[in-house]
Image: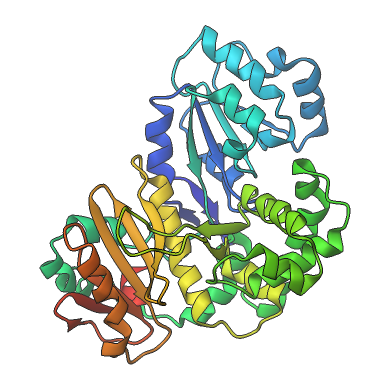
Length: 413
């Protein structure tokens, strides 16, 4: 399995490893994207057995070759790994030509710290030639060494009436969710750094690198203080509907600028927008997406918050869901559900014809009032909805209602 190395010489596997192997056996190019420092370089250098030529576009000599002599850089048909390929999008045309001449699977393994689907030149060059895989920050189970994410797949595959036994059988791994939220999932602060002050130093360095280097690879941002102010304001609005006009008014930026900055954050996997779940129903649903961050530790640092709250617990669950969903060949939808009268479910997994509604509560004693909207959702979509899942911070695992299972968050994640 792909590994993140411990400072003591041990190793931690990553959940996407198997999915990456499968894609390399089928497609001539596989693109691994994700925010900087999620472990992409370690992933692509350690996973594939046998020999692969490795080139990083963080190396200026490699960038020069990519611009002036890409055919030599791509080799003579041997497998090639190209790291941080978004730094020279023009290289993708040479890869396209090479693939059209020889479509053997696994020839090119590419990584990028940007969503290449959203970079027009890249997506056009690789259309029909590449499979895409996102590496998110480490899940809780990855940090603990099991190379897993939450039991989302098992919940979908198990009849509802057997969920309690399924979750009761999970390894005992109680943890304060606030500690998990503070350390986040980037490998260095999550695994290697043990003190909050050390993590703060790392997060500040990460923000400066992102602002001063990665961001300028994607777009010209002339006013970096404005951009950082926007990031802080966004981190103070985790779990809220995106209102670009209100956000701009609060920080003194015009709506078009807010729109462009949010798109840049999303393209570089820093910001996550969760869309509303909507089908052709009589009840009108809210269409604005909800805003989350790629990593709760980074979000807390940017917001200047020391104490995680309910939205951070939602964000922790979302990070785990994204790791699971993006490794799946048939990617499920991750949505939220909200009506104009305020009925809301935090997340809805849409996998095939199944809908799994999930509510998250930062309380150790959930009550019947916490399941109302889950039950409303189930009535609205009775033909496809599975039982509701209420994740909480306590220890009790029980059917809190006939169609809602209340479970400690740590038994699922």
